[in-house]
Image (cartoon, rainbow, N blue to C red; front, side, top):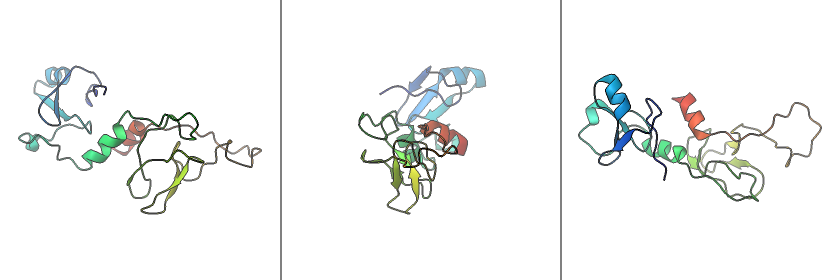
Length: 153
């Protein structure tokens, strides 16, 4: 497993403490106080939770799974190269693709349909679309979970 980078400075000058806590030496020097963050979900450790070893931030496990470096690595799959986990666009349930058929999936919890590659609600990749002559069709590009999390906060 690769070491995560500090969410403050994006450097690898970090030291894992007990449980899920980590300390960034670079940010600690810059802020002149100990800068701690959660090793799993990559967010700053809450000041009032410093006595616990487990992250108490909301959705820590969900964020950790989405930030995982694990990817689908089946060259025959329509979702090859995608992150292994995605959060449903409707209900935020953690999902994965079975690797068969087109990249579109339907969430079993809320019935929301979306493309596992680009996360658009309706995506018809050229390989699976019968209408290849449509000039308005945007290419289906794999979206990184880290970018989605960054925009959602």
